[in-house]
Amino acid sequence: MSIVFFDSGMGGITVLREALTLLPGQEFLYYADTGHVPYGKRTAEEVRSLVIRAVETIVQRERPRALVVACNTATSVAIESLRKISPFPVIGMEPAVKPALEHEKVSGRRVLVLATPLTLSQEKYSDLVSRLDSEGQVDSLPLPGLVDLVEQEDFRMDKARAYLQEAFSSLKREDYGTIVLGCTHFPFFKKEIASFFSPYADVIDGNKGTVLQLIRRLGPSPRAEREAPGPVVFMSSGDVDKDRGKFFRLMERYQGSR
Ligand code: DGL
Image (cartoon, rainbow, N blue to C red):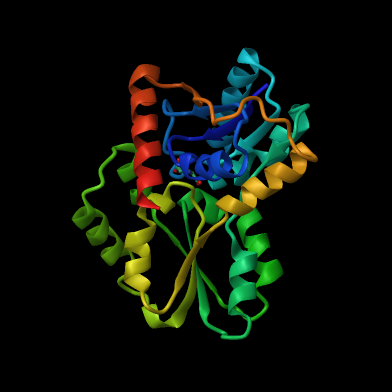
């Protein structure tokens, strides 16, 4: 049985990477819904039914040992429905607002959450912020363009920088102490985001926290299936041969960028 990672496209790689480090020797299957990426510009109803359809496809192949929804957008609209229909542990993601606010409690500096338009428009997100942000320190900004750049494997950094420059143009960067990457595609551009806010802010994501949660849900000392990390099985809803090539190239790029 594999631990399954699911994302709209290639963003979940940034979470899978943590799992390969923290859970060596386990079997992993990665499913990318590349036939329908990006999710962030769709409606909640559309994404919910796409996620359920994708998980049904995965389950037809094999029953997951656990399912990691390595996508903040899919989690925000579909996690409750998924938990209802899944007889295995389902681990979701949410923007790391809590650690960010804990970090900025004393400094009183602002927190900026970057995510997809759909994640930021959901009640799940506004509830999270209103529950935690008693001092009104949190701002949010959608960055859907970064998802497209990752999916197109377009890492011309002048292009990413120009996009970010424009998106951040109304912000006073010295106001911010922590930047939260609330979309799993964004860590591919962590350095570019960090350099914009440098030397004022730290950039964080919820990837390691998600994998630690997975480990808790798997229970004590999950049995290693083999000594070394095995090849990750890749599936997608798009052109699977093309997507597989892209997946392994992006795995390597992300590993090299850290
Ligand atoms: N990687 C996804 C997330 O964490 C969604 C990107 C998209 O499909 O728009 O939100």
